[in-house]
View 1 (tube, rainbow, N blue to C red):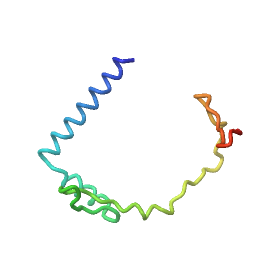
View 2: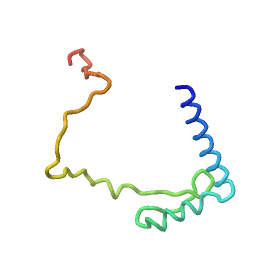
View 3: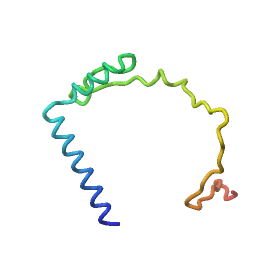
View 4: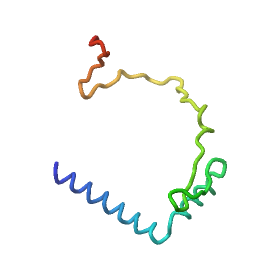
Length: 92
């Protein structure tokens, strides 16, 4: 188990290191500009944290709801951990 955790930590460190190295050279402007070009209706390039950054206005998605498919087979919920719900007064 410990070996697997060490392996995951190493992979995460490598990804972060490569990411930091890339943005140290390129900066974040191009990433933010690409996002704005792909989604001009909701994304803009702005300055945040003393560097170019992006801002996304998610309010346009506020009224989106999940739509249940017709003929969807429903399953009983799975309780892998054997947890039970108890109300604050101690009754379940």
